[in-house]
Length: 218
Image (cartoon, rainbow, N blue to C red; front, side, top):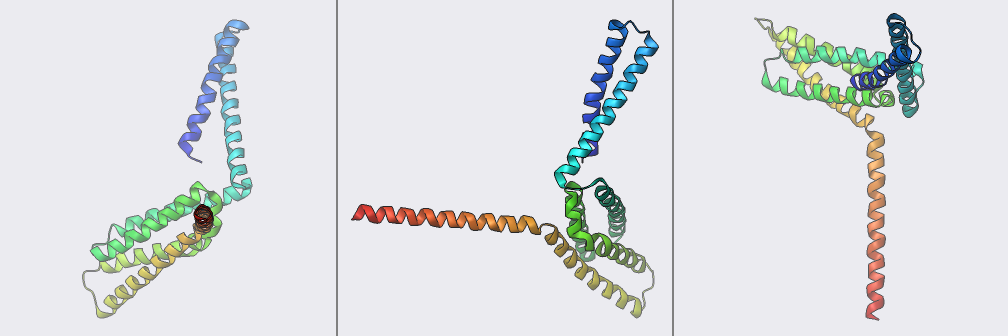
């Protein structure tokens, strides 16, 4: 759920309700200013909470999740967001352009996976390897690479370690891209199914037209 839109929706209902309660209390029931204000605030808070509960219920029902499942996913997404921020910070400390370009691709794909899981929480389960393993490896390797590459004097062993780390990060980027394809697997299967249906329809139309034309010639 988009936090800003949820907040706006809550306030859209809460503020007018509070205003109406204040006016009714003050003028229809002849309550004093303090009591009318108290009723107004209480009513506004209740409506704010009720709208929040309704939106949460509708969101969970739409995505087929229990509250416990959503809290679990949300917790892991928040942790992943912090890790992606660490990855971004480390990447922008890299001075070698080729390594930076490859790192930016890793960051882009990581953000995409996180964004998809945040928008549709059930996709999280298709990317558990990314969230629990691959993202951690990406952050740790990138931060270690930045630390070692910043050393003023590089020995042969250090250069070898840096070269190996670059290769590993390239492999990890490919792995994370596969994680993204896994997250999108249902969409890809659905698209392929729609393509097959469309091709079959086109074939049926062409065959029907051929039959009609052959009938005319006879």
